[in-house]
Amino acid sequence: MSKISAVDVANFFISLANSSPEDDITNLKVNKLVYFAQGWNLAKYDATIFGDDIQAWQYGPVEPCVYNTFKDNEYRKIEKTSNNDYLSKFTTQQIEFLIDIYKTYGIYTATALRDMTHQKGTPWAMYYNDCERNVVIPNKVIKDFFKKQPPLSSSFDFDFSKIETVGYRNSKGHYIIPREEDDDEEYE
Image 1 (tube, rainbow, N blue to C red):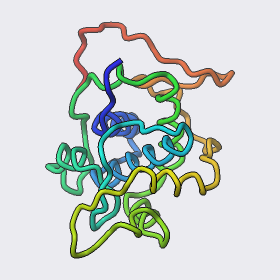
Image 2: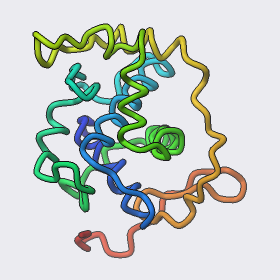
Image 3: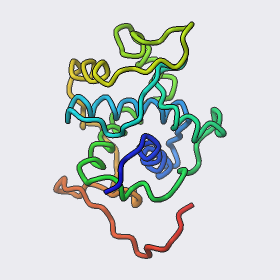
Image 4: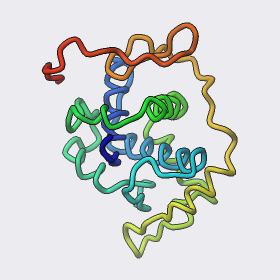
């Protein structure tokens, strides 16, 4: 298993969002989803899901590599992932966890997610400084904040059964990852 980067997590969310014509994902939104994934992974598993630092930027928590990878999209929808080999880096447990993050937070707009991260007492609010740019938010602070939050909800009604790129839960609730028909096939 390869080491997971924040960009791998972003690619996962982009693929998930692009599997539904109604969903859109921008650089701002994907950075917030990456932040929520890191925070909940720290709180739930006492470990990071990726090793990259989260920084306090003007519009909320940002992982700089994710921002730079997708910055050419500006405020437009990100149409495709930065690469296609990210999925093999995740365990089934991590995929299920990221789907739960998306089910919980993917329903919100980028602006709503930004506003959530800007509330008083959030790690971003504690570390953002207008005079000092891109301050790293320590993982311990992120973890402590998310540990105090109500449990991550899995109760949102979203039909993941049509998503072939990451799998789905069957009628018994078991997670199914589809087998690729052609391993050499390129995805656009």
